[in-house]
Length: 116
Image (tube, rainbow, N blue to C red):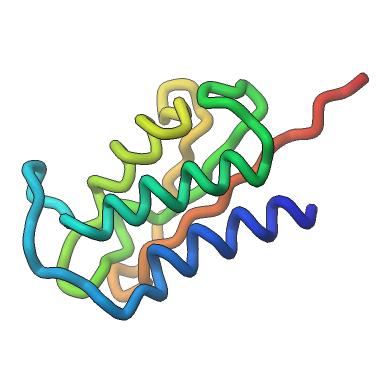
């Protein structure tokens, strides 16, 4: 539970609470520096949880696509999360939570404990 909290806080702090938001758009019409920070935060969260990319026991909940960073869409976060973690909507391991567009981007990583 402590590792889940650390992972959640890491992602939330580096993405949702970052006060330096750029209005520059990346190649997908998304966020420039913020998606680099998202990539780093997700990589750190995976390291904290001690799971490799593609772990079948990993689940990500996020409001990406609904929440915003400033006036920018957060849809590119879905691509970043899929690329870094291996989770995807098709595998039912990347779940999108519908929220108000005024809510900042957030993500939570959860790893189901392996049964011995």
